[in-house]
Length: 435
Image (tube, rainbow, N blue to C red):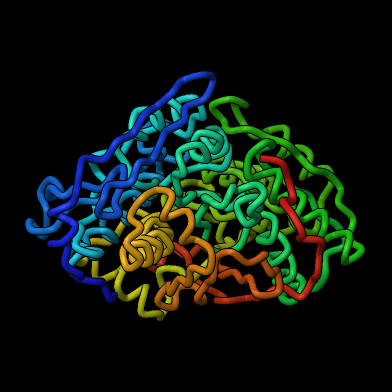
């Protein structure tokens, strides 16, 4: 990866401490006051702790993720490891604009809980230039008003369709790839091309989260293709629902040709295996968060390998791009626990590009980053096609990777096709579902 190595000598002579103010009045707002040298909150002339480049200053980024105790911790932990590796690689290549990047000082575990997410946001907001990770749609939405007031840009660990539209993401969100809504469209087009058009389908998901977006995408696909939606089954994590027996019972009774899943890995495994035991013979298409290779060491393995396909937004571990090669090299030969590591790395590309652009323009401030999103071009090193921000999303240009669980390959999924693009057209002029 290329990194700028511009001198900060002139800025050091003029720099003053960054200022931030948090005002609590039902919501938190912050003032981003620029230093004379074109830097602001979360940017220091002092080196980062344990700096790779001790002569560089430091850009502090925040992380709000499920690192322990929540339903997505199995994904959140390796995602965080992938992000740490990404920014370490940036620092080892000189940093950005004379600054190293630090994400560890302002990392907080939110356990995928909106209230904890909001509280952790308030703790780290005065210290950071941007969020390198905000995991979860509803969690990110819980702090979006505060982010708007603070001009705080964020990378989402989520694919809600609203993050692709400026009216709903406030011009603050650096999303990558498709949305949960268009994921369903792409996955069902692949299913049709591979197995023939289904006559019926069922969706199972978490309402008010990614499940709603996924379900509406499937419904719009069905309407465009004259396919019957037999049910939209609203479920919840087992920590709330106890089990997935209700969903299993409906699937076994309705016998749809295909089930679109938008749950977490534990619930997905229970639903797939339980439905198979109950006599269901159709197939399952699983959204991004539905698979973990650890499931292949459970009694659900047989049903998953026989009946389930995973939909992903980009190349998997068995991809052949320059970016995948860089990710593998960053591990030092130690295989990560799952593809969350790849996700964490890939999701960081837009923020790196944004920091580089802002540094070139002398605008390493929150407002400067927000302004620089318009027209930003991001090179994902082949993991995804190059993207340009500030444009309306084009479904025809979005794509997915389809894979099948396979315990004989690294990280447990074998890619069937990369870059599969949709053939169905739906109304995609705004968010498919409210968050």
